[in-house]
Length: 470
Image: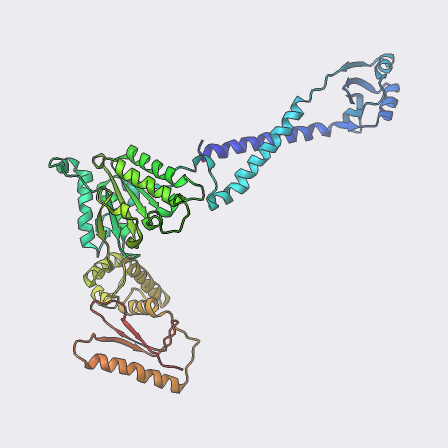
């Protein structure tokens, strides 16, 4: 039963309970609750038309309405009431009282109440905590993307040409399986994307699915592991079962290190904890599926050194593809991709911007372009120019300006001498990178000033911060 059906069923029970309460309230509006003595008086005055007798209650109808109420109810006291009714000429009847409905409701209503509370109150909290959906606890949480859902192709991936060339073989296999099987070759069972965070590993996996036009199963390694033993292994089985039914397809496991950490390093007494069971099941599935069926397993990690050696052996993750930080040419290509989305000025040259961003990953460059657009919007500009990108680089690397940090004249002079020394040395020595900007404005990382150089392609060191004391 899916969530929509459960939602409609809960509304049905709620409507039924409201209808029962309404009928009970409507019936009580036309019934007068009178004492037994008053009933006897009315009986003697021949104001009672008919009576229904139960074991403990008398219910009936007045001859004419009293105080706007046509019916009455009173607790039975006199056991010889029948004789008095006969002498008064009143028709009466007996009723055998059944407690089946009351007993049934006493059991059903609490269950329905608990069910309603679970559906409307506790279930939402339980789902957030990972305890909801007990019937589907072993089901995979993988999100399935088809070609139109990914919306990513290789033209959206830049700066990682070597990795893209290796993954183009996967696309070729999924499109032309006969081309490889003709000579007896088959695509690697598993391909591991290795690289620092933000270099585009997930983007590459989605681009492969978009280019091949196949189903794309995406899941994080941490989603396999739950507090219940055996859940992770069940989810691995369910994921591969879905993949076999949807073949050809791509399975992408992000953050594989959360699932595939080397066994025996966590200090477990028995060595059979939930993570190890899940990893064992993954290894079993990798050995069990036929690569000719068109299932390709991609995984990504930035910590390959902690993975279990059994994952990396031949026949499982056969190939490792390094997705490293882009060089200057790669940064230029990435900037061109992201700068298509903004209105850049004529002086916003990707070559110059790439010289200010050594060590930046693809995610860093995407954030840099967005920050530059924010700076341009803040100053009311019609386009994003090089100065906006420079300020975005400064904010990303050195932090925002500390306008509340005021320096006296002596401090400013000392910081200016210090930064001028950096600039003169950089300009005088051969082979040094050109100075792009010198500043004595304090930044949030604690620098009182800095010298910004345009590095051709080096790792951090692009901003030389002042170490002058105030």
